[in-house]
Length: 253
Image 1 (tube, rainbow, N blue to C red):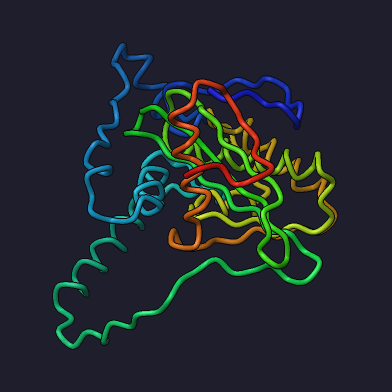
Image 2 (image 1 turned 135 degrees about the vertical axis):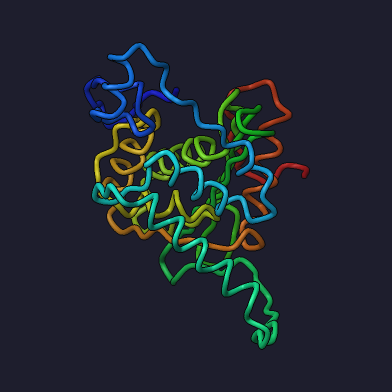
């Protein structure tokens, strides 16, 4: 479980019998009757032939971890939307023609820097690592990092890499920063101010606090194809024995 390094948040109680750390009567009733809370078997999620960010989103939906106002019908709505999508996909014969386009890393605006980060694990749970790179307005290499995290999920690895990258930029006193990553759920968390009560709440709070220390900053989502350098740095972190390494020049990939 990642601990807070920046936000200095106080310890708080997490209700272990619920999926989102919040107390609810249903789980309390189950415990009072001596029944074990039903375990969530989500192995099927990681076997879906979809993009990893979609897997993360489905997993968070089932754990009530989406940063929105509480809704008791969120599971019902998700199931209905999934059924609707499945019906349309299977019955829509006149599909739109496939449009191919070139996706690549884009330079930030003049006077800005761009931070790209990535994190992954070999399975969920699994050996995880993270990495990131800071480039200037012409795409020049400024600084990069790789970290060996340990055993955790890909989602937490994404958050860990994000915190490392933001901390590096704050230490370098970067005045204008565009933050880019290929995990939409993590990007949405950075743009949201809802306080979380999950086991990764501390690292999210750190990221938000670091963002506030940068004079001009914006967080955006990018396709995986535009984040390949950060992905390569992540793989380097997995193969090293040191916790974190910084690179002022490109390492041999």
